[in-house]
Length: 206
Image 1 (cartoon, rainbow, N blue to C red):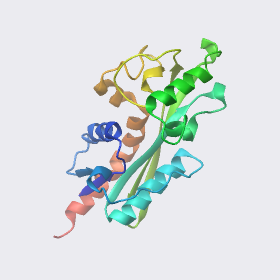
Image 2: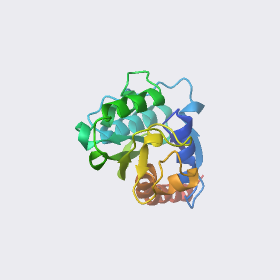
Image 3: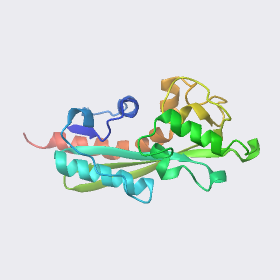
């Protein structure tokens, strides 16, 4: 069975591939990098779930393949939920990860440590060419630092400290982060469904 990761973000694709190695059945993994002519749907939903579903369903219909997609972001209650669904473009439509982190740190410069809680939320959607099959949510809770720490990861990883670990996601080894991340938690809830689908597909006569 072929499964397309609906992303061109090389960091996210690598994380997906690492997590999906857990699957106990044979899956040929692709990403949108393998389909340069495909134009993804715009992220116009009002929630991470809506965006994940739109990306998965649109890609599955146009590529005629099974697709797994996600939408995720950082939520800071002290900033009324910002950056939220605008995490990727918090500092502007074409902002870099560094620019987004800088804007967030500036927005929080007067917020005391006790109020610097934040969490990553991720929704993953699985779709076939016929439509949506499954969605799942994962959350990672932690604190926002007052400066960047670490050189690994991407997005807001360098300013997010995961509870119980005392390190930012950008300071954690990739294997550790992929074991505890919001994306991992969401994908784990999809795996059993995906394994059953692949097994059913393999059982069909060829």
